[in-house]
Structures are given as structure tokens and as C-alpha cells.
Amino acid sequence: MGARCDTRTIVGGGVFLGLVTVVGVVVFSLASRALSGTAEMVVQSVLLLGGGALVSYLPASWVRPRDPDSIAWAGVVGLLGSLVFTVVDTIVLRPLGVYHWTWDAIGGGSGFWYIPVWWMAATVLAWLGSWVAATSFTVRDAASVMAMAGQTVMLSVIMFAILTLTQVAPVHPAVMALAFALGLVVHVALAAALRRR
Picture 1 (cartoon, rainbow, N blue to C red):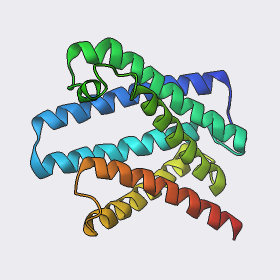
Picture 2: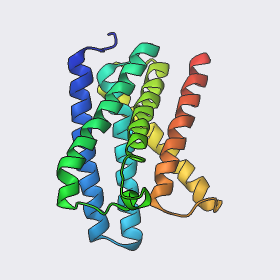
Picture 3: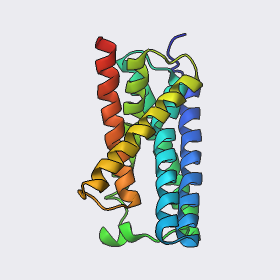
């Protein structure tokens, strides 16, 4: 079965991914209001791992990448998802005050400095997840892609343990986000190495 790079898959996937992101951000925000201490850190870290896995691997499950072009199209799904989130965020979440806007204050009242970073991050995560999927040659169905997502989550937990136990970084949800990104990069390298064998 070949890659699916049709408009319906790309645009529909992007819209769905954006809406999944909205739900994730709202749940994360509600958890930060309802919880504190260790419980807050654990719940937010789990949400970050789950959200990272979905953003990284859902595009691959839809596109089923096989070559550089289809990997790039999966990255476009990630970009469209972040754009959909930005629109919903600006029109709905901001006016409702779902969470505080520290990033606006840091940027002098403007979100234009970090919103493009969000777009780039979503694109790169989807691109890397699709790279793992294409390199592994096991993209037959969504279940095989989600198994890869589970492997990335396990690598991320290992990275988190290394960062925190060596005291390079504190135990914090932001460090879990960093650990996920590192775990995904390591997974790309491992998938490439296994392919060469």
C-alpha cells in the first residue's frame, strides 16, 4: 500500500490534528489549575508525552510515508495542525482566558515571536515521526505507527531519567518535553541504523 498524499488526507488530517491539540492544551491547562506539586508534574508530563506522540505519529499513520516526498507531506499535516490550533486559540481560547499569556508578556505584548516557533515545532515533530515510520518499513496500518510512538515514549522516559538523575535538568514537565524531542531524534537514528543492517 503506497503513501497517501491527497488533499483530503493532508487537509483533513491537519484539521483533526489541530483540534486534538486544542483538547490537549485545554486539558493541560485545567490540570494545572486543579493540581499542584508532584501530581501536577506527573499529569502534565504524561499529557506532554501523549500529545508529543500524537503530533509526531498521527500524520505518519494517515500519510503512510515511503519516500522523502511523503515524509514532507506528513510534515505539512503537522504544520496545518498547528495553524488550525493557532486560529482556535486566537478566536476561542484567548478570549475565554483558558490560560495565562506569559509568553505575550515576554514578547512585549505580542505573540508573533513564539507562534512561528510553535508552527516549526509541530512540523518538525510530524516530519521526524514520519521519518521513523518510513525508515522502519512497517507502515501498514495505524497500529504499527502507534507501536512506534510507544517506542519513542519509552526512549523519552529514558532520556528524562538521564537528564534528571544526572542533575543536568530538574524534574519538570518542560524537561519531559525536551526529553520527548531527544527521544524522537534518537529513534530516528536507531531506525536508520536498523535499516542498514
